Amino acid sequence: MSSAPVKITSPEDPRIADYTSVRERDLTGRDGKFIVEGKVTLDVFLSRSRFKPDSIFLETGRLPVLAPLLENLPDNIPVYTADQPVMDQIVGFPIHRGILACGHKDGAAPLSDWLKARDHDTLVVAISLSNHDNAGALFRNSAALGGDAIILDETSCDPLYRKSIRVSAGTALWLPFHHGATADEIFNALEASGYTPWTLTPGEAASSLYAADRPEKLAIILGPEGPGLPDNLIARGKAIRIPMSNEVDSLNVATSLAIVLSQRLSKTAP
Image (cartoon, rainbow, N blue to C red):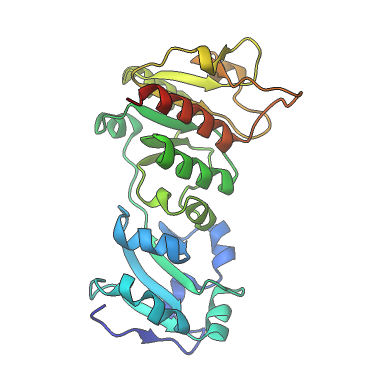
């Protein structure tokens, strides 16, 4: 870090406006910006994220520990520090991790163009995914088990929500994703790009995951917790179920994805 950190002593300091009332602004939006929280995600943000930080805000005592992460930070990215009571007032709650950063989202290309620019074997598609913990877990499982990129429809939650990034262990900052198309646009684009959609469902009429032939280009389609995918979308792909026992009728969406990806990975391993 070539520029000296800037000490903030007042919660009213306009330089840290991006960090005021964090929880409230998680809900109301940040005009194209997002917040990263914690050491693990800051490390990813500074080392391999496709997004660039606008600024970093640290509790004063964290600075010596994080110095190695910050040593190559460009001069134009300010590092603000504040003592814990001041930082808590700014953020709006006790920020025990004491580590925040702010970045800018990039613009979303039309889904068809986004797909054309990539050559992925395995896509993960989320329809109406509203839980931020599950969104983060989808990214982490995809990154770990061979999901090349993620598509989230327009009704799904923001994968760059603060908690989603944290649960994803920072993978949401580098794993390619597209957010904002309708479910119909997604299925049309997948078909045009040669993907075989596997629509996951616990329905007995669906094919067992362990008996299904593996397509070269696969799109794993996941619905929301509870209702799952609607019948009209299930019918647009190859319906796949994960066999279960003991009268359990469904699995958490991130768990389901991990099982499907692991099965696909095992079939591609040498």
